Image (tube, rainbow, N blue to C red; front, side, top):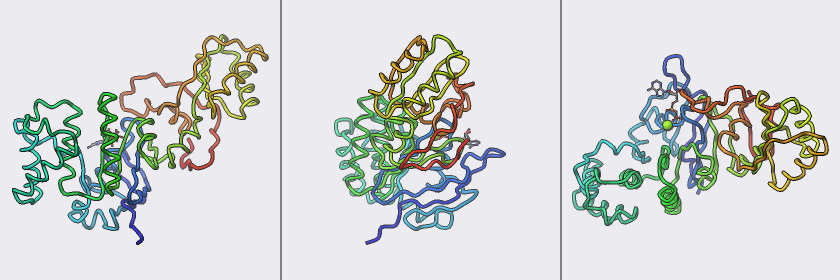
Length: 345
Ligand SMILES: Nc1ncnc2c1ncn2[C@@H]1O[C@H](COP(=O)(O)OP(=O)(O)O)[C@@H](O)[C@H]1O
Ligand SMILES: [Mg+2]
């Protein structure tokens, strides 16, 4: 059996006035995988998901869900997908069971079927004890799980999850991850968006990174991390003027370009192996480069972005809170195996 891809999109475009919120994105989500769309606030993740879910018109390009054209046959597509985040409008004064029952009825289930489906889903999502409590008493994590439960009433083969764990505490996040994995082992395909590299890493079989509406990279999470280095050595030089020398030393020792912020004398060095930090520090001392501070960190989304695009994740957001301005890439970041970098800035 040749399974059709769950999502096959090419050249997707969404315009809001002059803004291209989604700009020529190609996407293939394979049957049975968890595909992660990784990007900072404002990158265009939700807009892309909404187009694929028939909730926004497609301005350019085309998309198919299990071979069904999204623009031509939206009603058929809707029967193939579950979308979370639409559930919030349901009555807060009703209990979890009543809400799911109502939702099932709205989806065309008979009363008895809607009731048994509600019971089954509440059990699946660990909400049995809360079954008779009103939604207004639910915590954020419980709401998120109920929302996901509601999107599964019709057992859709493809589920869209828009930032399923943003704002959840670590324990609830872990539960959500387990739930998502269970869905996939039951045969679902999942397309999720996230702002967290670690979430994509934990969950996704494949990831694409988007920035300003464009796809900047695609591959497995491992390939993505390798591109940035498994960890990053962060150096603050005692003298900013040593930056060029320090970068030359890093290049000689590791064969890698450091990413520098000239005005503050800070260097970020991608490391395949955290151990190699020591080699760099020894070589810097031998070259008489004085170091003010040193740390080794796992790559953050911001570093992934910096490596892929030459700018930090925060300045992609409308109201960036950090201060990434002035950060410049050392040079073109070399593209490594397993991942394709589509847009070099
Ligand atoms: N309905 C809309 N009207 C105008 N601009 C929008 C609308 N929805 C989203 N945008 C803009 O499109 C860009 C992408 O937004 P969005 O898809 O929500 O990003 P993300 O989900 O990655 O945070 C942002 O610049 C956002 O301000
Ligand atoms: Mg969003």
